[in-house]
Length: 101
Length: 444
Image 1 (cartoon, each protein chain N blue to C red):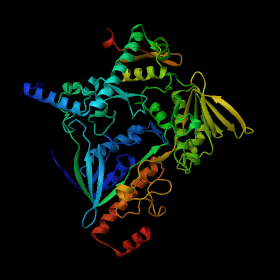
Image 2: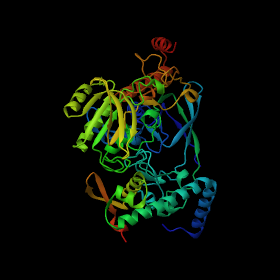
Image 3: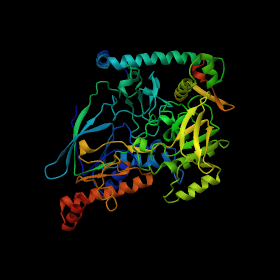
Image 4: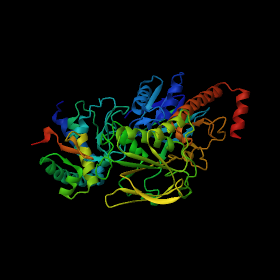
């Protein structure tokens, strides 16, 4: 759907107003998002080298294994990472095709 | 802003299995019902479970039809993401209830539940539905089988980037939404406010919630559910498939140190059920249940227990004193083996599940004028003959708001509460001396 210029302007104004009202939670969430991006970058770097299990990623990045698992779980849910089989007691994960570039 | 007023025969508070069943039982008999739920979807705790005991029916498969029936029933007004704010008496009988519709920031009539907003949202948050093991986005359809299947925005965890608004194909996202208060007029109220679980940090002896591989039984339900966070049973510390899993029974019930002296009535059965499901999911894993007593009093329950023993699940009589962890984050259970010369041993497992108890989730005293009993659940003056009748005329209770109970009992009590509410409405319309005598006896 295409918006008229007026509608788009109004939308931006509302968003700005709501952002001002929620400044504190917006700031906190932005900080959280920055952390998320830093961790994701490290995980993706590892997965570009080929499929890995969680302890391998944790060891290579220095991130706690439970945190790596949580991010892998999140990325898997939203189709950024896929499970590619099992290696002993651990599942292996790889970057999903679309994001492999 | 549209100000609506809802006129119904009965208001049901809580959209878990008990509340849904009461609403359906009344609506099917022609009564008008409003069902108010604080979360964005109905389904309660039952929709989080994997399978139910003792039939091992898939929980989603038996809960979603009820959720759907509630949403589509002509006699039910479904009010999700709403809080009851105040209650007053209606002149001539009944109640006037102030309800707040919390802003979803999504127009519920326009949203198609396509989840395009969710896919473009940049922030991942711990999913409460998956007990924080999985992730959700700030804007989302609450879970895959949510009813209504509509998105809502968690504005407290949003950076307000507006990407969702750009992605929505039907222009449903509305950042200008505000809370809206409206009134519900009802002749009677049924409280179906459910329960909470023993908090993770309750017992210092069991790691105070700090040990990653000591989880509660609802976490295990999510791990076992086909819609669970990992898609497999993995342990949270590192994603390892556990080879040895232990259950600690009475981890929150029959425990004076926690002020919970009662038996939660469901933990033996859910632990046995999960143990059976685990031996299906992980055929090589050793599964141990540490227990004080096994209580299997329901229809088909004892046979279920015997089947579990025959499947090779190890039942060890002994109260777990302490749980610590070794250097590989394996939980180490210290337990006295009562049937083995009372030896005290320490055993390491890959994963420990605490069979946590059911605690009161809500105190209805201040808002509804319904007192609670010593156990913290709603007071029921005549539990043997009228188990859903509270001391407050016109207000009834069902499900775990009345005390710990399983799904079967919740459904039975939901039917009872619906019948009591219907009888009350009829009595208000056409009083009868016999009925008055019974009421007097109960509320004396």
